[in-house]
Image 1 (cartoon, rainbow, N blue to C red):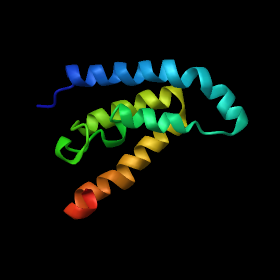
Image 2 (cartoon, rainbow, N blue to C red; image 1 turned 90 degrees about the vertical axis):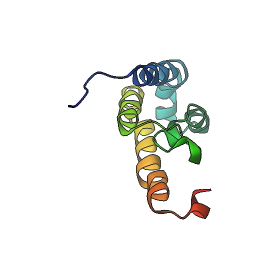
Image 3 (tube, rainbow, N blue to C red; image 1 turned 135 degrees about the horizontal axis):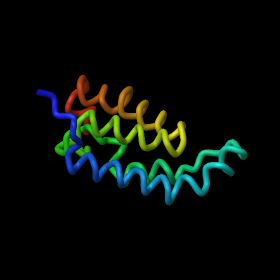
Image 4 (cartoon, rainbow, N blue to C red; image 1 turned 90 degrees about the horizontal axis):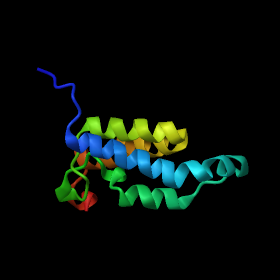
Length: 109
């Protein structure tokens, strides 16, 4: 049976990412877009929220969440600005997950 209700962990993730986007990104994104600038602090903050390793096991430094968590985080980032969702999905999907699935222990470290 597929469980369609979000877990408390998923709900907390949604609220955390939504609040971060509302507080940190939304007030700045219009001007940044007009200036064609990327705020590097966003990436640092995403790392602090453990979004950049969201579905990587904790023993490898990740948040240990599932792919539903990744999808929820991407959805919340997309609401505030597309570029953040792209950064997360590419970083996790093409980089981090590739190393976790097929990398050697040395590469993972």
